[in-house]
Length: 278
Image 1: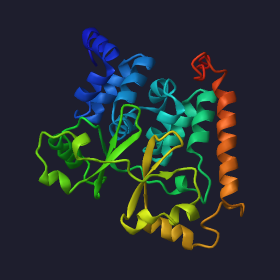
Image 2: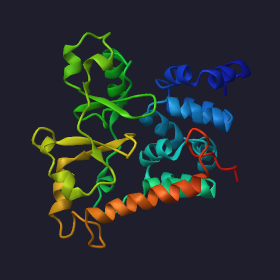
Image 3: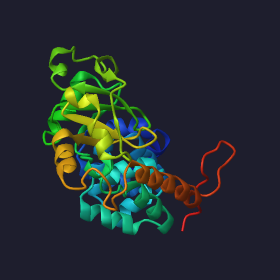
C-alpha cells in the first residue's frame, strides 16, 4: 500500500505514475489501484496501456475493480473488459452500477456476424513515445501476446500506428515508436459486417488487421484465418437473424441512441454529463 505522499503523486500525476507502475508486478499495481480513490484509480487506468490496465483489473476482486471502472467512459472501459476472461468480465459487469453496466454491455455486445464478434484483444500495445528498447521489453514480458505486430496507441487509446516486431531488431534502441510505426494503418470497424470486412484488399498483404470502435479506440485484432472460418459457415457472414449490413448499421444506431439516454443530457461542450452515482 502506498503512503499518503506517494498516493498524492498518483492522484496529481496519473500519466507519470502509469509509466512508473506499468513495468511493475500486476499485483503491486493492483494494491495501488485498490488503495486509490475511485476517480484517481480511473485516471490511472486511463493513462496505462490497455493490456497492463486489464492485467491489473484481473488481479482485483470485482467489487474493488468496479470503483475505478465506473468512472471511465464506456468507450475506454470496454477494451479493458474485453481483455478479461469471461468469468472475470461477467463478475465485474455485475458489480458495476446499473447504468454503467448497461452502457458497457451495449459497447461489448457485438452481434454474431459482426467484426466485433471475432476480435482477439490479446496483443502488445505501446505508446508513440515508447522507445524501441522499452517496446522489446514489453514484448518480452508478454510472449503469448506477441505474434508479429505491436500496436501504437495515443493517450485516448486510439490507434496511431502499427510496428512490425521484426523491424525493432533493425532500429536504434532509443528511437521512439512514432518514428518507427506505420501511421494510418487499415483498421476494421468493430460494428461492421464480416462479409464487407472480408473484401478488403488489405487481406492480400496482412494476415491480421486491427479493429477499432466507431471513435477509433483500439479493441484488438481480427485474424484472417478466423474471418475465413466465420464467413465459410452457413450464414456466418451475416447476423443470426439473417439480415445484412443494414441491420448492423441499425444496431449501431440503436446503441448510439440508447447510450445518449443512458449517459444523460449533453453539456455545453456537447459531451454527455455523468450520471449521478448510484
